[in-house]
Amino acid sequence: MQAGFSTRKRNGREAIAVGYGLLLGAVAWVVCPSGLGDAPGVAADAWPMFRGGPALLGTAPGSLPDTLTLLWTFKAQQPVKSSAAIVAGKVYVGADDQHLYALDLASGKPLWSYKSGGAIESSPLALEGRIYVGADDGCLYAVEAGRGTLLWKYETGDRILGAPNWVRAPSGLENWVLVGSYDFKLHCVSATTGRTNWVYETGNYINGSPAVAEGKTVFGGCDAILHVLSLADGQKVKEIEAGAYIAGSVALEGNRAYFGHYENRFLCIDIARGEQRWTYRDRGFPYFASAAVTTDKVVFGGRDKRVHCVSKAEGQPLWTFATRGKVDSSPVVVGDRVVVGSDDGRLYVLSLAEGKELWSFEIGQPITASPAIASGRIVIGSEDGAVYCFGAPTPR
Image (cartoon, rainbow, N blue to C red; front, side, top):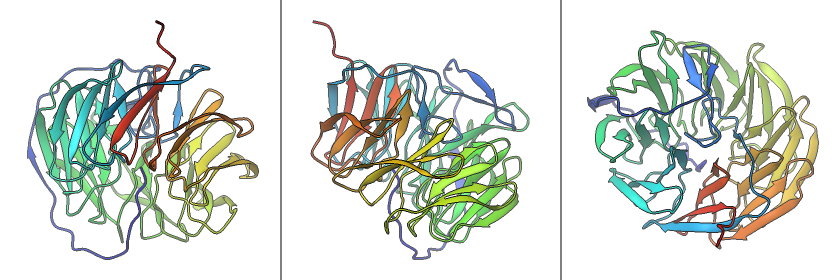
């Protein structure tokens, strides 16, 4: 989910961490270099966080079945704008009813729920037996993945809408969790204890999730600046003028950042040079969704009711697909397909090559959450208050 925002300034207050917990459980991962310790890639049977992995590239390994059917639904009490995380056969997702839910991926059966102090639009991060999620009460929560027991919570100065991200600490002895807040700050805390490591203050709300790659974190916000920080100490590496509010999250690949903004443009920024590599503009509508970045394409939704696909090298248009509502849902690419929701109440599967509709399912209420894809299944929430799971038809 990439939510809307306003520009009213609020006073931040000192962030504090309370409580601590033991490290519980573990997940087997494919390891890839991050530039600051090691960050795991995405296993074929997992979607552990928003956009799939720390660089927020929005691509899923594996493939989808040729035929999709609705396998189960789970009903929360209020809209589900949070994008799910999937790990070890379990689905973790938040809802506006203030609850974080754990569901069985196979059946949709609820396993546990944890009640926070505010609506949960933030997408959960599943990491080494813990689930981290932000809430409208301004707190980042860490709960035990097996039972939903609170381990600690960290208080920021305002609400948290973006998903937490993570990186291995420079010492290699623990993980750090990163999260942006409407208190204008990016917070870095210990994943084990919730104690603060560093805090970086910007000029306005941070609405999206910080991207992590090669020892840097990159994010935008309502101050219209692309921020590049050193993960080791939270010090500014570079500030790059974006030209307008950045409501979504940045996809980060090497030294290139891909994102759209409020003034109707989608950008590719060369971080090393601190300049725009290319700019894409179609019609006069802002981009709130985050992009999916493949080897040669960039796919993103717009408030012009379209899904756009451009060449990664030059930003040249390749295709557009028209929905019947704005597309704030961030698309996911899996194999040769694109999966995305729309405010028209439909979930779409499109051809990556041509943007042709291959399949759709009408839920009926807006879909602002983004898809989570693992084990050949699609999990997505809707503003009708339900979580839906689609996959291959089960044999009778």
